[in-house]
Length: 88
Image 1 (cartoon, helix red, strand yellow):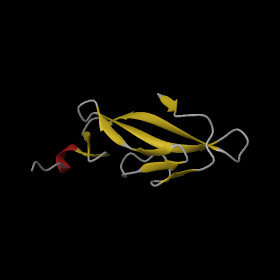
Image 2: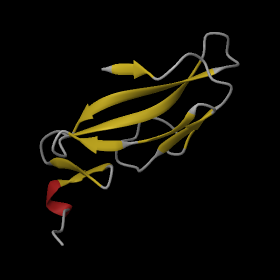
Image 3: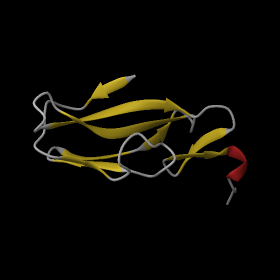
Image 4: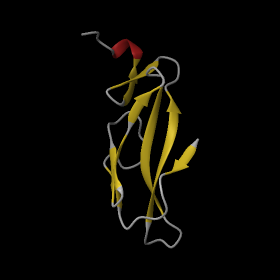
């Protein structure tokens, strides 16, 4: 499911340059910062990204919920292979 955060902003930058749940990331916009986050008992991640607005000059912050899939889990706000996790 894709959801928009607000109407159009003046600027929007995405540190991981799009929808990349295997990289840590955040969106910086004139309405605030939005960090990619794990939730649902580490089975899903909410990935934030920027899209171009209707007129090509303004931007919009959107987010997408991504399920981890078999063999993956969400740790430190990125998706990783479950066998790569080390319990501390």
